[in-house]
Length: 421
Image 1 (cartoon, rainbow, N blue to C red):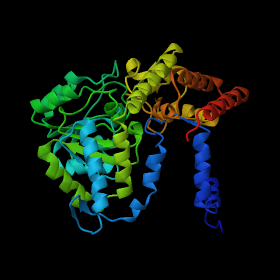
Image 2: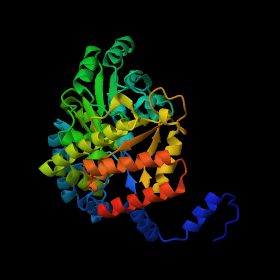
Image 3: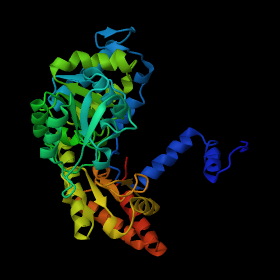
Image 4: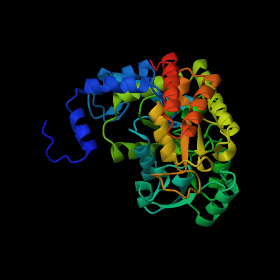
């Protein structure tokens, strides 16, 4: 392949990789996943039956519409699958209504806004810099572009949600909707308090539980219903399903939500993903999954406790869920430096801003660590503490190649002990 016009080393490397069959790249990715320890809080391992459904003949079907009312023929079996997913979502999350067709979390939040708001309406959402999500009103997101978002955050001293301050803001700005939920908040979210604040100002409450859905389903975190009017979740992360999303709501919002999904913002659903969602949801109703959800939290707390013992600053002082934010300021290392050093030894994390971070998102002060994927691999508290010790050693190595090589070898041994398949 000619490389004329490609000037950077990175572009040349990409071009050379384009000569490899995709199957080879997939095999290489499997090897990478098997040989590294991922503590990225938004990642997990989908079980074999989930992967089988995603790669099944169901992807061959077109099924615009909803069960019993399709625009294509031959959907009798698809209808049965989608109803199974809907009913499971309603049971698991105590919802009146569920739409299982959303393609992903960001489109699903857009669909909720389109269904229940007018462009320019005032909405309150958690600031991205304090642990929220882009779709909770950040200015570069459609949410911040189309709606008048007021951003709340956490207490600068404790790192905890300040419900009294949120209530004051709601009384001042009178939003039509309040969005709660986070991507980098390590404590239990008080949905009941959020619901009371919303009702007091006549606002709707949207709970985005994308990160904690598996913990909610497994009994390790409180349910957002009946306090929320609408609940959105992705179906991977702690739920351990396929990449996708679900919108659930109280009965009075069902028609508006369904119209916003189809035909409002989507065409035909991905029926293979719908089947995988059904499998994942039904799996949460087992004791095995409840034990798994509880183990995620135990592992997270074990890792957090270890880091605190070694002088690391955990935002909020600890964790109640699957993740934690680590402020590395007192360790004289940036989040980017930590990210690169840990990847060098085979530990995969993500750099992350901490509340009131003086640094930029591209070179922040902190890192985010999550335990859902390693829990899926079978690690328990003692194993997680061993991983934590390796994190500590890596960050203290300061480029000591002998030490980094020793850590890398221990990472490989843990990976071999806990295979991903």
